[in-house]
Length: 397
Ligand code: SF4
Image: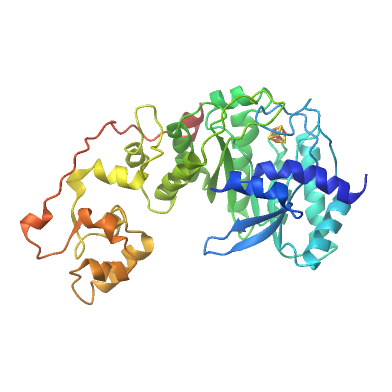
């Protein structure tokens, strides 16, 4: 089998490991794209980076029920030798088709052996080709400490997919993966290695959930997500809406609506960027523990805490401003800077600062406005009592 045949086989598998709001769309586009091994990763400050998204091999001895590569599935399999894959990447890089590498793999027998092949690939890039660019390297569940350390030494970002938020849910998807010993322990090792060696893994550690494959609720996902940020210091958690794979145990299961994935990203944003507490996020959940598909979680949380509003734009703290629908971190910061110079007294001024005034209007007032103008009508009652914040061990049990 030549390199281009191998590339066709493994990229057909790798495209199912796409994370992001538009995952399903990306997958559809990818099937029509002659360069479907290129994944356009969004960058935090805007723009995107084209990554060579590839597997070392799509051979796998695991049996994850949602996955195209699960053991026993009849499909073509291929394996890249490290020097072969490194050479292929450099060819694409020289042609300016890709700017970075996102390397994952099936688990071909021993997790440590598979991971060593991936590390060898990156070491060839770093040493033989003097490639200094971006590498995102997946860690294999169950791989040894030495492999995790070696990965942290060569990669800009490392990740290991949790796939499900609790041990109970993961057991529904795989008979061979162990959430605590096989996955979370590797995350803790990576965290420990990064804290001991300053400058390693500059883009941090991440993980991903397959949403909707195991019958988990959004509450399950968000509790574990919050615990991962607090205890492991993950840089990001990604959500990928489940899509059934033909000839797999979940073939007949309905796909997860992409909107559920989108709502989870919105809730994650509130947790990670806006500093909302897990108890506040609980206010956005229904009695089944799921986010509304039709309502924005931040708006729901605000409506269920009517006693917090309206906030005085000229006196509210940065944190209070952030809880107003339509006000984000940038516009909240602009408000705090501007009001040190002058009094803010109109929606038009706020609009120029980036506030979505249609959303924010009912939740704010300006010092000096009459009592009548401050009156608001919040019809929603709080539905759920906020729960305790679970530890990671508690969340995944
Ligand atoms: S470990 Fe599971 S998710 Fe990963 S390639 Fe193997 S079967 Fe697929």
